[in-house]
Length: 106
Length: 120
Figure (cartoon, rainbow over the protein chains, first blue to last red):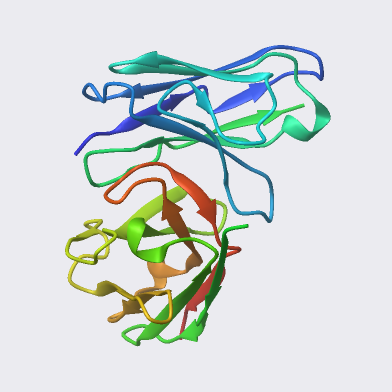
């Protein structure tokens, strides 16, 4: 079973700053990694799939990169609505596990 | 617009059973895999079960294998999760999610979730 480890657990930033979140896989997953945003009381929302492709309707300030075992999600300039919890997820190789999450807080 | 609507959550006793449903609309149900993902109070997301587009293969997390059964009904475009031998630690919001592929993929659409509480 592939394990996804996210870091840091919490990221404290201000609006307008750049956020970089990390997700590391215990073995290579090629490009098959997705990122989600979850706000309190809401279902998760897909942001990025296949490591670097933005889902429909996702603003350009969100970008993903990486392959193999090391991946990043970057939020170019934080908007107030971006403060939330972010999860990475394995797209292939069952089980389709999630990382533990990174909370981006003010 | 793709829609997923869960139902069936509620209060159950330890050792009891519940069946969750997820009604899907506005996409070709048989073309996509589906999964259940849960979130315990204050915790992260946990994938627990998935099924391929044709229902021919099912997958389970170790935490629910042997107790939960995933299935899907094509005439009604409904995904199910039969939960038996419930434990207190099964308390969570349960989401159904559409996969982007027939077998695996990202979760490109989510339901609003249904709360399952297991308590005596």
